[in-house]
Image (cartoon, rainbow, N blue to C red; front, side, top):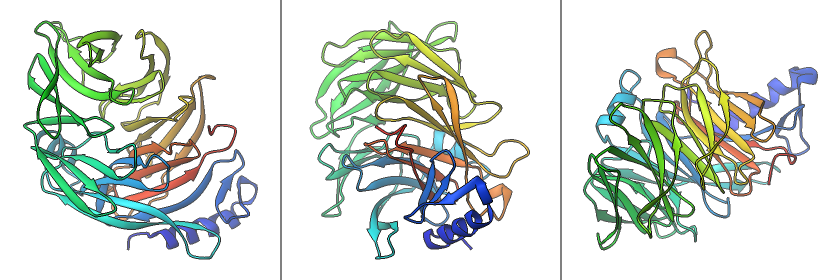
Length: 370
């Protein structure tokens, strides 16, 4: 039977009781390690694996996207096709026990959802934007009314939901207004293959992966207003990448097959630091709002039965925490590990999602929180 938030918390409390000096129970009932990281609760979306996570601007809600479990081919299917998916909104509730539980507020079915696309709340926290196979869906989470804007082959939507990046050819990316389809910018790289990766700096910049003739790659940072390249990061991989950003930093790693994460300066493309995650498959990365912490979630490492979330102190260059996923795994073939990770806007909470449909919450120690 799937673990729900009450069962998971009860089990965690029991484990902490028998763990001796390895962990302790906070005054609010959360499970706390000696180093200050605390498990503060979980929610479950049933058998719908988590694809992405995003906190609202004030941190009082969490949005998650999910796809049906398909252990044998989920990654390939998600890259080539746009299968049905759902977006859910979670919010914390106090049931008088002194503990904070997150509950499912609402959900929306997307007929053909683009996987691995960034998920955003609008700056006012009123709406979330989800990428459909041929549309951008703007969902007002208060009125629970979705608006659908047809877009051919959308790849990314900007954080404010106003613009969408579309790959119109191998060597061109167009930025368009979501509501009017009016072109705002046409970005090109002299005939080289281009793939939009993420909007940066509140949508002012766009990061695009560019593949050169010799199959080497770099990440180009374009200023959308001037339609010019601002900087570039020279990637070490010849495979597609995934990206996270905060303030003036970008983190990159190989898509689902890399163990090295690089930290770059957005302004000049200089490499600041690299981290080696070991022999694992990285499913997602996130930077804390102050760009001091890097989190990476992984599939189940060889010889182990749990996925992990690895957390580094960027300035110190050190791995400071490894969180083992606490999912109740019934069948190794149906559990892949931790599939999504996100920091809250104040940096005090870390959320992770796994292939079982669970979302777990952890309190970040004050020494690391913003």
